[in-house]
Length: 309
Image (cartoon, rainbow, N blue to C red; front, side, top):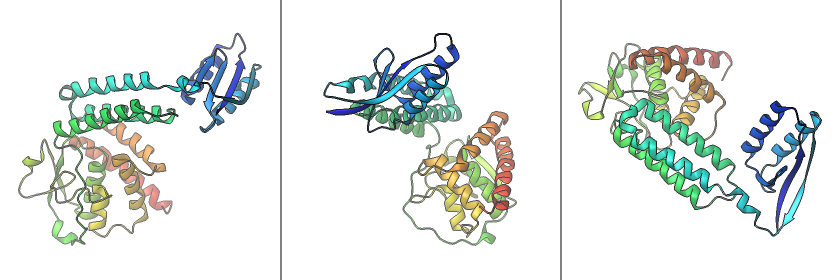
């Protein structure tokens, strides 16, 4: 016998706004439709969504009742996400085919969008099976293809240890990283310019092999500074130059880490990502993007420092 939370409802006939809002809420909750007006969620899931919907319906003069259903019938079939995963895999395939035309920046945006779709679908996949595994493999394969197309993609983590370095030996230098910079590379450039080498100059590489001999490379495989173990490049630079004890830099580093490789969610990450996306839409070149990102990160750092982050 399996247990399910059920919601039985009847909506007011003329409130189309309420109907649309509730339809979206029911869809987002991932509930199954037993029949018209009867919706179910596994008892093991977070059924608070159904309770909120019930309260909303009652507040607008409709009928709604939640209860428990225990049955040996195969209600699991109502939660089969196979078709939805199939649609997602098709979207992944389309993006992979068009990577050369999309380019590095738009390709990465498309990948991030697919990852969010995967996460959203996973949250309502209460009885995950092979369809989910296939979709995850497709997304992983797409990310691997992206790395192959564009300057090596995100660097692989090194297992070497960090060494404390003398900032005096890293002044007035040329710093090189992959073109179309995003969160980790932009934040690292800001960290370099503001705390390590105030007269730093930057060059954006189509591929790491083009790095000038006199340049200091960062955030690509084989670079002087790149991912080390569980640290992203921003964190590696901060650790290498003795900047880890600045709480505001630590807070920015945590947001950069989450946006770059995932992990523990960070409150400031969404704000930083939104502001950098705005900067990216405005900028017409990588130099212009960095200039906008410098302003964004200056404001974030000052705000965090004043708040005692």
